Image 1 (cartoon, rainbow, N blue to C red):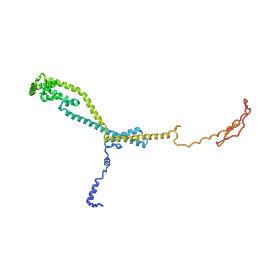
Image 2 (tube, rainbow, N blue to C red; image 1 turned 180 degrees about the horizontal axis):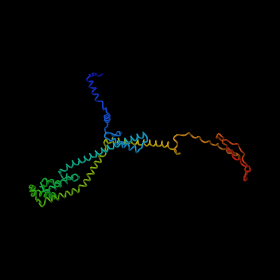
Image 3 (spheres, rainbow, N blue to C red; image 1 turned 90 degrees about the vertical axis):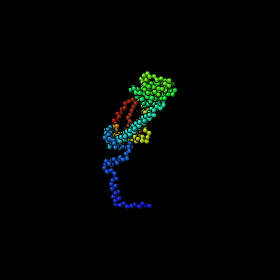
Image 4 (cartoon, rainbow, N blue to C red; image 1 turned 120 degrees about the vertical axis):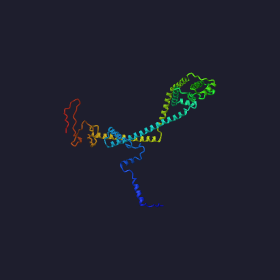
Length: 379
């Protein structure tokens, strides 16, 4: 079934043609160069020598240094050096991206660790129970918080500020004492009893705490008003000394825990990390193949030049010569059956033949021969 089409009016056709002129894409060289990079995401798998944002002069310096060191002898070797430089630059690009990603992960891991510690510190500083104080004393930031609180309290006492019941409850919580000492069991503990009597004396010295004074006196406790401010500052000084002695070990432990959390984040187990590792292996493999091919090409070229230029006996000539025919061999000699000695003569054509036989000389044992031997015939 064919679809029926409505013919375009001249106005619609003109509008479409005008719109088509606006969607022809870039026309200048700069626009075409920018459009060619539209599909570029990260450039880690690209062998392009220079990507947008990189310095072309750096690549040119690198290429010039490699050409100087590797000394290519022909166009093929220069091309190999150029490709090796591109592969090395691509591998460096992957390493830089991996290092940047690792730095981000490590920094974020440290910040996350700090945020988690700060959240637990805020919950523990409320000091709603002695367990909260134990949690503060087990961590460096908690000890630093207690040191800052005690220093602020000591400065207020040194300035002569009045001591109110809220301040007494605050100090009791940081000393691990019961903040509500009015029950009989709490007052029987010597440390709690001594602290609260001293705090009551501070309140009485400031003109406050009459209700608490009446309760303590009803329980048979008389506050000691002998220099309560100085004695309380001595307690604070002892607490500060103990906390400062505890702090270095806790800080070292805290720094080690933070470092371990950051080291764990340095290992990239994500899909992006696996892809970067694969890109790096591909570029390194390309570099090794090009390096092997360049060495083989240089060796072949140097061997060829050596054969052409060498004239020594150890190097054979490059142009093969005609084979030299073997020298003629003399026919085998047959031993005579008598004392006659056959002789062979060389003919003018280079062959050998049996010479005319000559009688053997008469030889008598012990007697010199009487017939002289004829000299050998010479040709």
